[in-house]
Image (cartoon, rainbow, N blue to C red; front, side, top):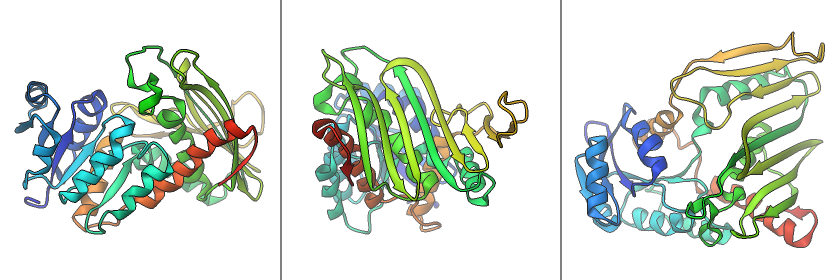
Length: 334
């Protein structure tokens, strides 16, 4: 650590890192991006030049051996998340690992061997956005009454056979890519864990990925999470929270723009045309910067770590149960 700033290394030149997460980290007050690594030194140098990063490495291992790196961001394809996170932790680097943390529960549980001196967290930037914080505040206030249902829709269209999201053997498909967001929304706003889940899955005949998934999760006490996710459907995203006295909708819950305000709608059912709906506007912010800043502050000991390895394992148990439900054609206890 240098001058109370966490020195970051970026693993790979993946698009999400180059376009969203790395610029977000660079804008964090307590962070500085020191290096970027790729399997190609030329690619690493080009990325470093584009983003103004000091060091470039032609292998991940070289960067992990750099004593001037405190933490790394790992946006590799899903099947490489755990292996590279373990290597980074063994080198004494804290790790912000892109979601999902692993391919399955057994894969995630390997992370339990990481020493407590190294912090590891899953990169769910949405949990750091003020719109999610405000929505939870409203839920806890009782304005919506007793919470009953959370409905999530998250879809996009991608039929590119060369895209990692369509490669089943390395963790492609809707469940791991965006189902994790729906599950996170349920766990976050219900402030609990589901006891069982059931799914309906449609698989692409060529890619063999889960391209459209519907599911219902039972959180107990009459609380249900229902969601529909798809990698081959018109783009749509929403989180709707319904209680006995009102409902709340987050308009852009997952890909909130960093340069535009976001909106939350609160409606108490006085009519059906939405004319009495209250709209709360949240100022523009970069959720990737907030994520990096919170993780940096946790490394510096200035705040507790928001979400740890055990949290990621809980999420993976739910995601894995979706596939088990498909195979058994029924409810799966979690």
